[in-house]
Image 1 (tube, rainbow, N blue to C red):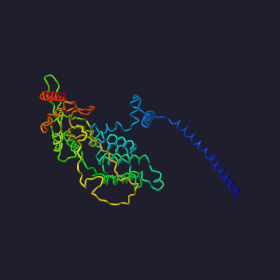
Image 2 (spheres, helix red, strand yellow):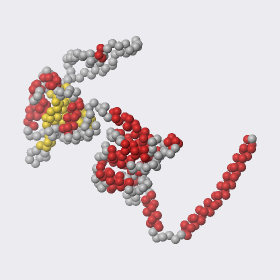
Image 3 (tube, rainbow, N blue to C red):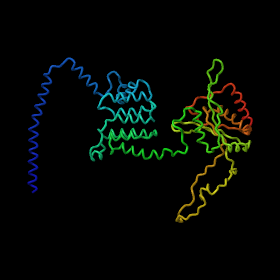
Image 4 (cartoon, one colour):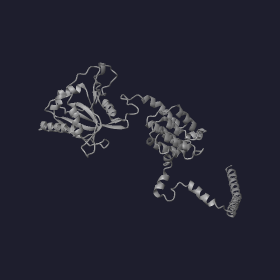
Length: 431
């Protein structure tokens, strides 16, 4: 039986080879005739220029004469497209105009993946990285009903992976900026990629987790964040202070002070401080023989804004720590005094590992437009108005590295004598 089967296979292979040998001469003959006709055809005067222009359009390299700059620009498609299409206006209207121009270029929307990647990089430059309508406009760039899988095999093998990855990247950028999709986003994803696709899976995950984490922050911040440094300082100090009775005080407003004749104007930085009644009482009880310290700057992030604050504190004296009596509701080791036997074994560890860091008391905090010693000395001078005991306590400045984000500070003619007097007073107390 096996011999008969091998005979049939040998016959089929021999027929197949005969067929190939029979068809090959005909293809070679047609190719020879076609090349002969192309050589005998008279060439029009504009054919060479048209062919050269067509070749230059299809070439992805840099145009001649541009050198390395043109080659680098060719590697990043649509990099200069936004500048030309938006008309130079870097706002939402210019970004939308550039997307509309790309949609009107061709019905097939060739190069839409590269265009969307470039648009995602340009969104922060145009200030539309948190606009849901712009993200829906980018999803609308995809051709409709082309990348939808038709059978289970296409669903298994990631139908059109590059386009699906681009759609997931759009949703990930929305997630990073806290933009919640809507029904229009879902309709566009269904129309472009279908129900069984990775962009739709990403969409369902965002819609599941975003509403649960939307209001989980116990210290919410306004959207958008204020640009005024005074308002940012208020938000930062209120977040740091754990006492609701703490009062925020504006000691100095930012202004440009007039300098001497022929000199440049001096900058007067803002000074915002916060202090609670308990901190004032602790500062009044502080011994004048022990110095207090001004330390900072310490960073604090408010979303994408970084502000810096300083503290006025003292060292902790050994044996001075007061043991506060904790009620049954605040007792961490035995909460609410409930003695319940929860089937604990002798090997269970009932003690909590709590790292207790002993720190000195903090008397006040501030945020200023500059971090030099003169600006912080002005804060101490203004703080003495509500804390008279501070005038008798030596103050030591422990300032770290200066930040480069804030403007340099200067002193006006009126503030300079007060600052010199304050510094002389501190030197006399330390001596």
